[in-house]
Image 1: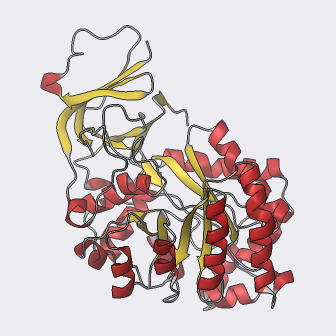
Image 2 (image 1 turned 180 degrees about the vertical axis):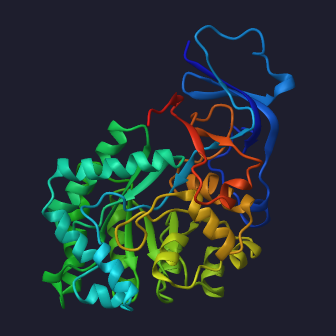
Length: 422
C-alpha cells in the first residue's frame, strides 16, 4: 500500500469533477473567476494518483486508515494543485547580470541585443559549457521551481543556435524529465535569434532550422513542440510560417513568442497553424482577440518579463472580459526574467494586469496545464489525476498566496504521489 492522507485541510483549492469524456480542460472568460474549493477537507492519494477527497465530516479514513498510509495534518493550511509553468527557458549557461546593469543605465532590450548581448550572449556561454555542466546548472533551478510549488514545466531550447548546441540543450531537457520528479515538456526553439555568423543571411539560417535541425530533433524524439520568436528584429511571419510548415510534417506542434515588442502578426500566425499557445502578448488588440476567439490556442502571459524589462503589461483584464482564456508562466530565463516563482507572477498579474486571485490561480494551474497538453493529468484536484500538489504553511485563505508575495508559503510538495525531499 502506497498512500498519503492529508486531513484537516483549511481549504482544498481547485477541486473539479472528473468528466471521462473530455479531451482537455481549461477556463475562459467569466469561468476564470470561478475557483471551486472545499473548506475543512481531506484528500487521499493511492499509488500516485488522487483517490478521493471531500469535507472532513465525510472522510472514510478517520478510524479505518489503510496500513502504511502516511498522514499529513494540514490544520490551518491550504492544499493547491501544483503549478503548471508552461513557458520557461531554464536550461542555460552562466548569467547575464551585466546586462541587468546596462538596463539600469538606460539601454533597451534591442540595444543590448544589437551589441551582441541578449540571446547571442547566452548562446556563446552555452557553446563553452559541457552537457553535464549544463545539466548541473539547470538542476539548481529545477529544485528551486519545485520548492516554489511547480510540478509540470515546459522548457525551450534556443540558446544553442547551432545544430550541435540545440541538440545538447534538448538532451539536457530530456534528462531533467528523466532524473527529477518534474513532468517536462520540451520545445525546440532554434528560431530564437539569428546567429552572428548569419547576419544579413537570415533566410539561410531559417533553411538550417528547417533542413537540418527539425529532422534531427524529430529523429531523436527530443521535443513535442516548435517555437519561433516572431517579432520585429527577429523572425518574420514568413519565416515563422516556413518553420511551422516543416515542423508539422514531423509531428511538432507550434507555439510562438508573439507581440512582445510590437504588433508582429505572430498571434494570427500561431492560431492559423494550430499553435497550442501564443506567448507574451504585451501588444495585443481587437485583431488578435478576434483570431483567438473560438480557438483552443492558449494566450500565455509573462508578467515577470514585463516587470524586469519595464514594459507595458499585457491587457489581461480586457482579454478575460472578452471571453478569452489566459495562462500565466514564469518565462524563467537569464535575460528578461531570472526567476521562476509563480507566486510572484500571480502577484504581478493581480496588481499590474487587474486579474483577481481566482483568475490568477486558474491561469497558473489548469490553464497552464492546457498549454502543455497536460490538462487531463495535472492542474486541478480531481479523482484519477496524478497527485501533484503542495501543502502551504498556515495561511488565512487561498487569496493570501498572491498577497504575501515574498513569504515562503509552500511547506510540503507532493509530485507523482510522493513527498519530495528538498
